[in-house]
Image 1 (cartoon, one colour):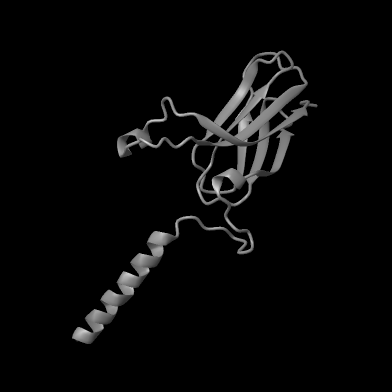
Image 2 (cartoon, rainbow, N blue to C red):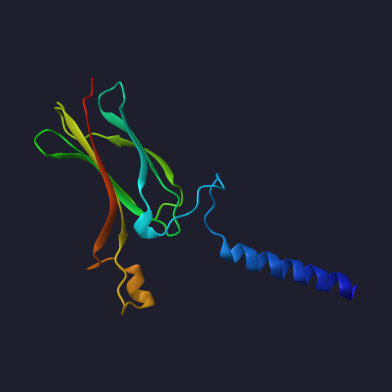
Length: 151
């Protein structure tokens, strides 16, 4: 009986050790996760919905070692922001969003801007400071812009 309990304990210990090392999974084993300064936007698509009030945005980034942040915004020809979304430490490199356009009158052309970034690490930050983003600078890694019309 003791041998079985020891075996169970050894299996549990090995599983615990392995599961602590792996927290990001990717489908393609040839896609190697990249360090933060090498992460790039791989694909960006913008498709307006037929109702003229919503826009589907597809964003794909290269696999990453550290989870990136992002921002996507839609502006009209006058530069007024009609929609935006913040992405906080995404776990998935493939993301799809529906943005709802604000405003009564929507006339194009429209511009969609997206960028991915990491917060700058400070040398003297403590564990409590890591939770606060106040005063931390964004390091933009990659950006993309596209223009579209609703019709």
